[in-house]
Image (cartoon, rainbow, N blue to C red; front, side, top):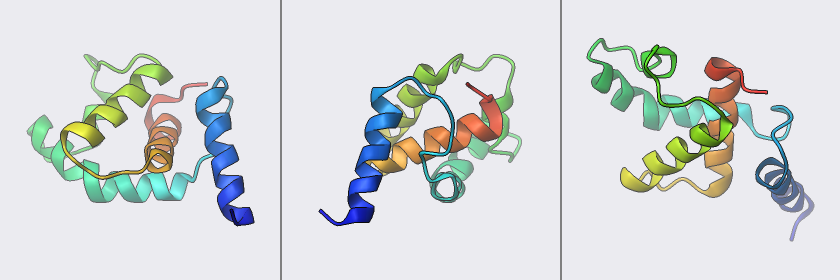
Length: 104
């Protein structure tokens, strides 16, 4: 295993195997890119207002904690066949948490 791959793997272990303590482990730029390319349009359609970010900020949202967010990202990935790798799911989760939910 190459050193960058090993570091990425260890980052994932820390992200999913330990309590979430920050966003430095995940690749936030990758999470943002995935959100823009694979999530935004669907969410914009669901809200009916053409703004995909509204789904994250609505008052009746289902995501109340980091575990809910991880589950929702995984569910979208599976149900919509987005073909995201586990590290991509982690990146999206970290990006959404930092950008919208502010989970600690």
